Image (cartoon, rainbow, N blue to C red; front, side):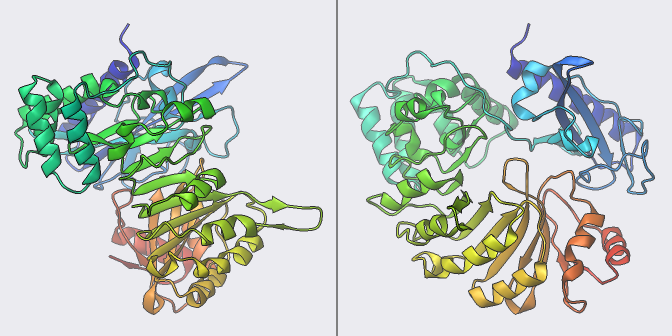
Length: 483
């Protein structure tokens, strides 16, 4: 039996074949989306079952959530494997468990169980280009890997890697290390050289990707203890982004100070695991979701961080007489080691108490990093009271204040409404979400002044059309702009 990675590749290959057939038979179709979800019914399906949905669209990116014409009337110009001539590949449970969330009937809409994973578009030598857009949805503990010692086997290689870490934005030291490894006949030298090449033909790009795929677990040692398979992404020849799942403090301690952290620029902590930051993460630019322990480590660091984007989650502090986010916000506001922070997302654990968030946010302008902040996003379980947040934006004196819907793990998802300079209001899709419908967006903005221009901004997740503008204008009884 093939391993999970091979099974996922087989599913993607089948999806590519479906896309090629649909593109050939239906010239008006421009893209397809592959989504997967796990559902368990103890009465009828005691074992987890992976459900697959494929959506074909006349747009450059299919609309998600899909309105299935099998269940309700839809005029979106889209069809899925249920309501159209599309088809869907098979997906083995073992291969896709980590990329889905388990559901046991606790959803209002069947579409909620699905997570978009890949988008197919016309183009490329084979006529189909497939982009993987899905992320790990949960952490799965991995066996402690043997041979978890030093990756670099010679003092000279360790010395050159230290120079790579010391100059995170410079490709020069990386090229020098690549030359050294090539002379030593180490395959990583070829991988780094190919990754740094300004132009690669398809064969060379495939060779680069194959080298990384076959050697990634060895090249990230000892971080494989907290980075599950599929959670490591390389760029410019080195580990650059990671989905981290530390099951306990022993896991975190086992990778503390590891030199391999030195090239990691983005860290995403998977649900259910510990969040932590380490002084060895000298290149870190994007991190989340962090909580109090990690924030304390950031605050207590002996050197400034390179962090530009951060997502923090706060827990409500309670006593016998009061409750507040104040203590957590005060910790954040006193951090003096974030001179590069430009984007901050804040999540809160009490969705039924929005007034606590409104009380807490005004504490932030006293923070040392506040004058450099370009955008603050408040990630709320149920976004509401946009008119109030528009007034807060004016008082806070920050370029952009965004209100975003919280996804299943607390990350920004669904509709995001951002208030900017000169009464600008921009609406984007922060992340695919089952409730990100035009009807819900119309309801969300209903409390804003009627004459306030609302601009729909397209992203790779949602490309707005003039039909969307017309539909929203009819639903909300107000005009929208697109651009």
